[in-house]
Amino acid sequence: MSTQTKYLLQESQMPKFWYNIQADLPQPLPPVLHPGTLQPIGPDDLAPLFPMSLILQEVSTEREIEIPEPVREVFRLWRPAPLFRAHRLEQALGTPAKIFYKYEGVSPAGSHKPNSAIPQAFFNKEAGVKRLSTETGAGQWGSSLAMAGQLFGLDVTIYQVRVSYDQKPYRRALMETYGARCVASPSNETEYGRKVLAERPDHPGSLGIAISEAVEIAAQNDDTKYALGSVLNHVLLHQTIIGLEAMEQMHMADAWPDVIIGCTGGGSNFAGIAFPFIGHGLRGGAKPRILAVEPAACPSLTRGKYAYDFGDTGHMTPLTKMHTLGSTFTPPGFHAGGLRYHGMAPLISHCKELGLLEAVAYTQGECFAAGVQFARTEGIVPAPEANHAVKGAIEEALRCKREGKAETILFNLSGHGHFDMGAYQAYFSGSLKDEHYDEKELAQALSGLPAMAA
Image 1 (cartoon, rainbow, N blue to C red):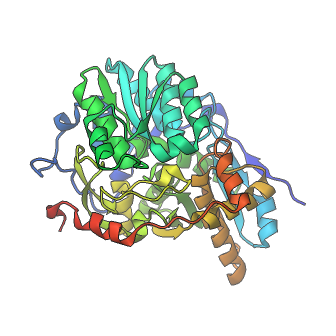
Image 2 (image 1 turned 90 degrees about the vertical axis):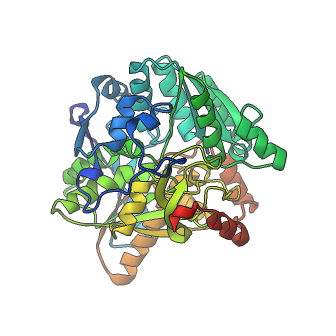
Image 3 (image 1 turned 120 degrees about the vertical axis):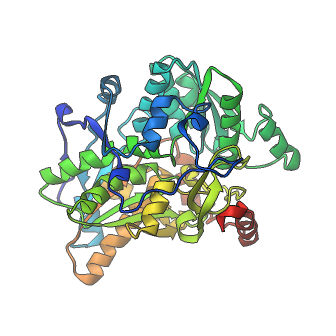
């Protein structure tokens, strides 16, 4: 049986610049609007939440933005990350397709999230910030920012979605090991959290609620800024180091992808692998199919409406145009906590509207089945979120088998599942059920979109 093939870049080959897809889009991104005036916001409007260096990245249209050397120095702890050829999975599937995956689980936090946590902590430290507040679902972002805060001397408070707080105690322990304070959301620490609990004391939480709590804390304290792990332009920018490395590694493998796949919740790891390839195509290069795979229980790209909406449930954030299920939508408590967000990143939503990518949704049961098959062939246990990308890759490989096509598939394995083994135990015992959202709740959430969205 063939063995796994690994493609490694030298440390000197780590990218020195992030890639900004806004420089190559055929149509500009719709403007971000002030929640009060509904007029386009300026940098000063975001200053209470972010340092100016990150705000300038958020609005930049320059193609390349330099990665500061102190950030690259930390990245050297695990980057460049490896690219693998999944020979054993290919053989198990009996497919003529070649399957490659970029593995981001080699980071200290076990996922792709430090790719943005490290630069966000660095730029906040440079601006004199003392504390960061943030939200987290499954805990990958929270643990990554906790680590980054420790490395740059920042206090970190993390509001973790209640259902994930309860499901993933070891993620919480990791955050605390790195020195952060982890709070179950909704909480009694913020005005908005208390409001939610007053209406529903057993609320399972959502990323939208946790964002509201973290934003409230940042807005009320001059020494505190807010850090977001996905969705925003500058976060997606930071993650492009994934795709930039993958492009070099595909050249090393003397191959080029026909299909590129990533799991999508808010969109950071998906943009990381996909945007450099999309940009290459927009500039005249090859144009692979780009496939976003999302959970059927929270399907913002496949069921959401493309409209202006709030990024949080408490309506404290600016309005962005995105694929959304409605800011008040609370997805069921399925195990891919990092994908339980009501909206998709505006840049990814815009790319879908431009026809630059496709989207598909799968249930958690079929995604866990794919993850188990991957673990038993390739040896890596994927995170529940990454299982969606694995499922997408397997389905594409089986399509190639049916059609007799020897296509090249590249997917992003965004993290390992070592902190999520309780979910795998539930899967093996048969107690992990496919969670379905309430159609009436979705309709109600969509009916509550800001009036100007029409």
